Length: 122
Image (cartoon, rainbow, N blue to C red; front, top):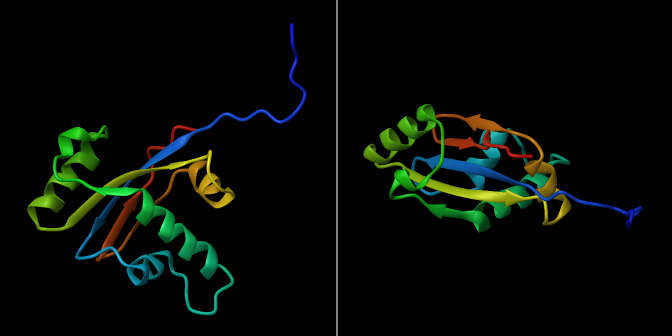
């Protein structure tokens, strides 16, 4: 029998849904996160914005998503109101920032933007 004594990893992904009134922009995202110009967290959240942007795809048929009933209802309502809906995944196999946000659930919302990363499967 072999016993591994070095670093062992279990990869994981976190699904997310983004609903936006109009285009999903960095400004909308930073406003939602409450990160202001000059904040030491600004580079982290700018990178997270780019990670979300790189990993999201438009949702035109919500039946293709696996999600709870409440979120599915919100997606259907948002699409019927002309809002833009995206879905995607973050992976723990990537860089450290993506791994960090992949290990927890998160939900953020305001009047312009909604981000749901509650489907964490860590």
